[in-house]
Every structure is written in C-alpha cells, then in structure tokens.
Image: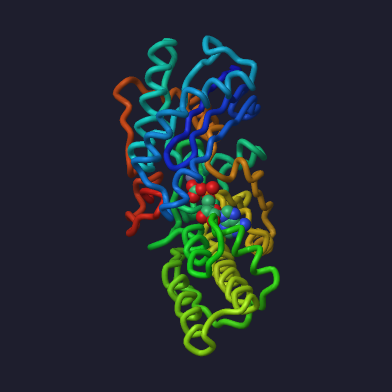
Length: 354
Ligand code: KG4
Ligand code: ZN
C-alpha cells in the first residue's frame, strides 16, 4: 500500500524535514529540506547543546511547512509522522519529538519514533534498493561503526570507535593546523598538494583483531608532529601542512579500509555501503571501494549526512511492519541499535554515541 510519510530530524545540528511517498520497496523522496546550524556554533568550536535545542524548536515548523510545500502535499494527506527519537543531543531530540507528537495528535495520525542510526543504516535501501543483509560503515562527525543490516529492524554491530569519530578527528586536525571548519573538506583540500608518506603516523588498533577503531591517538600524533616542526624550524610551511594533512588522511584511510576488510570477512553480505559526512572523502571512498568485489554503495552526499528522508524511510518500513508509537514515545540520548553489542566508551563532540 502506498504511504505518505513526514520525516523529522533534529538530533544534532541540522533541523530537517522530508516527505516520502510509496512503499518500502519503491520509495520516492518528494522533498528533503535541511537547515544547518553550523553558523550558530562556529564561534564555540563544537555544537552547543542549549543553542542547538533552541534553534531546532524555532526552525521545526518552518522546515515542516517547507517540506510540505516543496512536495505539493497537504498535512491531511500524511499517513504517519516519523521522528528521530534518539540517540542524540537530548534537547534537540525532544524538540523534534514534541513537534511530531503535536502534529500526530492534531491530525489523528500514527507517530513513529525512529532510531537515528537506523535511518543512516537503511539509506542504501532507500537510494539503491540494496538487498538485506548488507554491511554499512557509518563514518561521520558523531558516529563510527560497522553495522550488518539484516532487516528493517535487525542490526548487528560488528565494531566501532572506542573514542573519537573520524569526522571529529578531521575537525580537530584542521583546528590544530589552522584550517577552517568543517575540517574534513579543508584537510582533504590541503592534502591534495601533500606527501602522504612523509610523516609516520600511527595506525591505531590495526595490531588488534576485530574491527573496533580508535582515532584519538592519531590526532595527538598530528599535534606532536606540528609541535616538533615548530621546535625544530620555528613553524610550519604550507608544504609541511599539506604533507601532514596527506599523512593523516592516509592513516585514516588505511585503518578504515583494513577494518572494513575484516568486517566484510566476518559478514556474509550482498553489498558494502558507506554513510556519514566523512564518506565524502575521495581518497577514502576509493580505498573502501577497492576493499572487496562486492557492490559498493555510497549514497549521494545529501542522503549520507543528517537528513529527514532517511528518518521518513525508516518510519515507512516500521509502519509496514506494524511498529508504531503513541504519545508515550520518549526522547532518548542513548539508544544502541544493537542491544546485544557491548556498549562503547566515550562520547563524541556531536552528542551521544551508540
Ligand atoms: O554526517 P555529518 O554531516 O554530520 C554528523 O556528524 O552527524 O558529518 C560531518 C563530518 C564533519 O566532521 C566533517 O569534517 C566530515 O564529516 N567531513 C569530511 C569530509 N566532508 C565532511 N571528512 C573528511 N573528508 C571530507 N571530504
Ligand atoms: Zn547522523
């Protein structure tokens, strides 16, 4: 049966709404709008939860209205409202859940609380119709994990970061080297003119079995290399900076591709997919694609980064399975997708890890 879903996302620093129509096997994104809060947080060097929550509360109505208008859909035509109910910054998640509850109650339509990570994990199906089970590597500013996606509500976490997320490491390295935020694109740009073999940076956890990852030591190694240059030569040249960026990027790509190879070795899957802002990195994409002969799926960037179309899609699959919520739905700062996996330590700059 064809469904029309409104999706709402507000778990970090993007306020997003989307309209999705169709079925779980044939979804069509009618609209997908995002308002980023990057400017609001720029001066603070990270997302400030209080500012984020307030900005979400202010922008949510507007984003929902814009999504409806762009889709040419009216509120009564919506069959269900899907909203990120966690994990994330609690104030932002609460803003979204309250907005969704108000709409669901006013319209008398079902409410679906979606796990933000499930939204990312199901995106390869939304964009490319990838068959279950597939392996997803989620790499963003707040997340880093390998998930085997067995079904719309069946996820196995094969490993993940024990400290920072890779996007966080890119952002910190950019800050250390005086490059603008967001750090990923600036480090990648600088790396183009650099020698990736010049600095011998660590490949954290490669010597250990399994597919857990760590990025905080790598960031510290970049700091040390920068300070050594300053001590030896009184500062860094453009070339030093480019070489350091290239060496850092190579280390991240080495670690992620080797751990992906291991994760794929353990998982009997049909495809390998990536999601998250760091998946925009050209060197990383090329390295990941070369890891195996399986089909490699990298959704368009707008659907790799935080968005509400993925939340609407996860919601659509939930409605098809008869999994809906009522007014008792709660906002959860932590919500592991795979309840059987051991909890991870650490918490990212962009909110709770899961
Ligand atoms: O998925 P995303 O938009 O937001 C969340 O973290 O939820 O990811 C943003 C992260 C930032 O840390 C940014 O520096 C990183 O993705 N990023 C990149 C690139 N573009 C964005 N990292 C490496 N290379 C890039 N080209
Ligand atoms: Zn996300």
